[in-house]
Length: 365
Image (cartoon, rainbow, N blue to C red; front, side, top):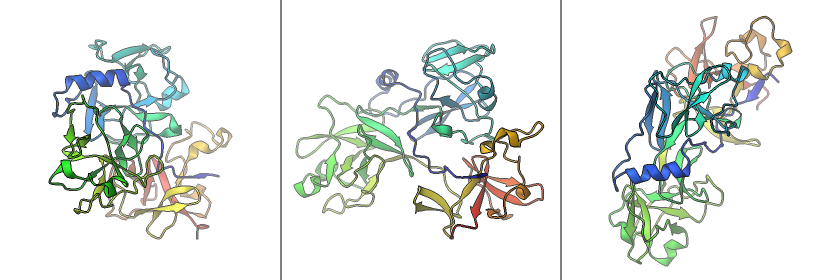
């Protein structure tokens, strides 16, 4: 099949570039209760500050990535053809190893920059600063990110809504939308049956944006920006957020998911719907959205110097009549991130996601 179902709602857990040992060192350098400072980086690397961490880019703002198969320190598993699609990031001439940064000597002679033994790459498909087309590709490529400090037992998890705070079992954490007395929230038994406080160790101290609340029942509870944190008994699986909007107590407090970094915005013509294959994107009429992925066509189908995976490798006349392009109007503007509008050879404009043009199918009813 020439057109594959879009993988827009990736469920993969992100791969961080900071191991637990280094993260602990970062935490110790942050004064209690103050925002942690941005880490130092080489001259050709920049940091995009986000709610869940610092995303790495090059000096031009192009996203940087890590490869899950790079497991041996000092070595890269992305060579030859792989390196053409994922160009390695060279270490600057003035680079001095240290503070987690090192150099990987590649067989092609390139001195590749690495952070915590994870070599860094660009993605050839990214077209402009801010593009993150390589995120989640083949469940092996991830944005290079230094996560913000979190207390022991608190994780950062990727969900459909964005990056949320979770407990050590990856169950979503919640905080009240508004509150006047954090120590008295959800102390009564009727509340605690549905909402379990995220308890802090007795020796725990304030950390970055995290603090400790001493409750009226004597327990110590983690809080984020002054709001106490809870788990919801109705969440069964990691990533569930069924506690969103539920009452926290009889006093009127309402729970909200602790969303550290929201997902990038969708175009206004997109909606999410459930299918037999899971949650997917659809247009406002409910038609499932598909991507055109030339890289899945056998190489024997290509001639000359045509590059498999090129977004413009196939114009509309090479697609079957059942695939309906999703065109953009003259007034439409892509929200950025993974979304773009591609101008075709006939002057029309077509929506694209992660560099792949979008379609609906006439057989979907």
